[in-house]
Length: 167
Length: 167
DNA sequence: ATAATAATGGATATGTTATGTCCATTATTA
DNA sequence: TAATAATGGACATAACATATCCATTATTAT
Image (cartoon, rainbow over all chains, first blue to last red):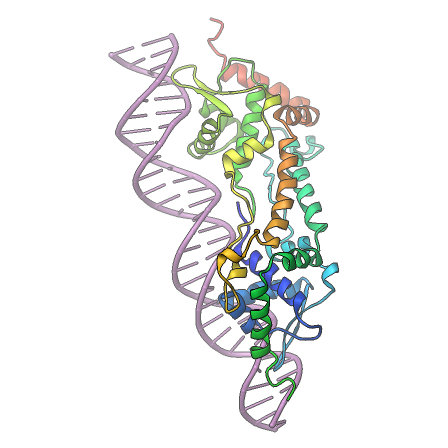
């Protein structure tokens, strides 16, 4: 029971896109290089973000990924559901109906109480995720990123992404 | 990203143990038969519950499993952690330190904000689980179990568990 | 138009975890 | 002493996450 590592990549990718100057698509190759991630698999995660409408894509030269909405309007829950899917974590297989004492399904009017209790806890989790936006995460990130890294990152993007931009 | 099916079995097993007359150990064979579950694999789940101190075991004839505490004192969180482990679901691999712009680990004073946000949501989930006891679940279960099933269950236990008890 | 760039989506391979089974051992009761 | 029942280790299988590859489509610059 743990989240896929791809989720971590996806959220960090969104956080990075949120820091880019507006209207500057970031190609997958640079994203993968920036985090030292395997590009083909990262592609799968970005595809899911794209299909979920969280990022938009621009094909061709000078293309890449951009956020589809303002960071304030992208929640952690949306990113999590884009990658891990919308399904509940606790699956009820209705074992209460099985065995020698089970009765016909129609006699069970409500979902099993165990499932409902588990789902209630999941709802609390989702609520917290829905209350956290990419802007909130950005804010946390700014406070904790070492200044050295920020400087290096700016220089790196200058060299790799924006080279020739001003020629 | 979903819970193991064994978790469902474990919680239902505890709920069943909670309904047994006090001091009556329920052997694994009957538990498995009652829910139509594969006994050897159910054994693994019960072992975890036993190691976590949630159930106690009695070996030998007339042995089996009994709850180690009153249902009020067993929480959903304890059962979940017994089966799925205590680890966090979101694992932070610190990819912020990777790549061409990462700096030495000592410069990062706090855990990554993305991880902290995910963990905050998990804390809300755990809090809800910790607030739900086996007694609460029992209460929900009683309200939703068809009377026919209750009758069949009592008869079945009379026939299988308590036979010869009063001879 | 053409060449180069970049995302898409399908197919496939690999590795890890969950699921399931088996058995020898230990503990307990009749 | 024989039967019952949990324990824990070893092992097999199935499902899912991770990873790679490639042909295709879309776009931009020349």
